[in-house]
Length: 295
Image 1 (cartoon, rainbow, N blue to C red):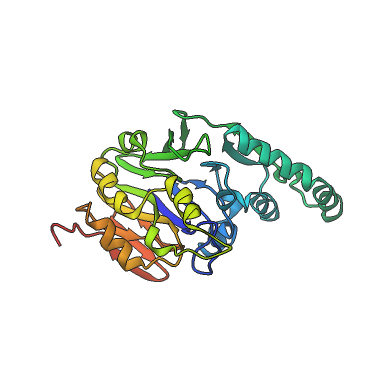
Image 2 (image 1 turned 60 degrees about the vertical axis):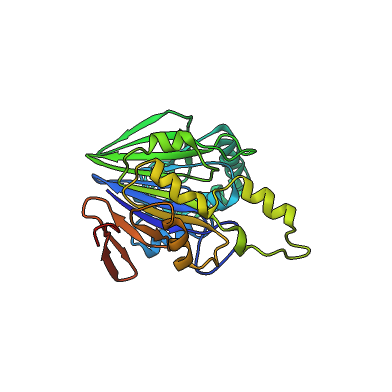
């Protein structure tokens, strides 16, 4: 099983970090979790065709997790997808998807009539309900939707992926979640969001102290992430959804590492981890996940 971070950012736009999105590959199956701004382009950079995705899982209704949804529909159709894009989502995200279909209906009809591509069925969405506890089975890959706490956004999901003996857990957006910790127990890799309070100064007219407190309250502070990984008995920790996107990666690793004895990785767009071999790769660089207690 391989996971690739396609977007490690948040609603704050930054050239280094696209919106939230990660790709999980195992046994020939490709599943995309979230599709924030820039994720479709990151897929192209990773050499993965949208048309080859087996499903898209939506963690929750926020723009930085869903902004590229219609781009995936159009892009996959251009690549020859012969069936609608499969989206698994809660009712709020389904309403968004139906709204996008309606908003772009005129353009869709025009393209279908004028471009005369041989795969009209591929220009659309197939939405399936997603609820906590649902287990999805793909060739070589199983997925469980886990309820997490991102209130007032409800529902919100993390996901646990299993391929053979390998386990990958992803947090989505959440405060510390006991449900996620339990579901992620003994995972090979925990991919978790992170919020850095000290890196968010007050900016008059943009964010006040109340803004920072409110936003931070439904995310996970950097000092909490290490203990969460320890409680889950994760073998390694990968940080993503980095708020703010300008936070120093080295400092993130040091701070998260104070509460977790295993390897800690600060996520970057297009960084991938192969859980079978314990190796990671990023923009031509490769490394092996080392046990911090053993070198």
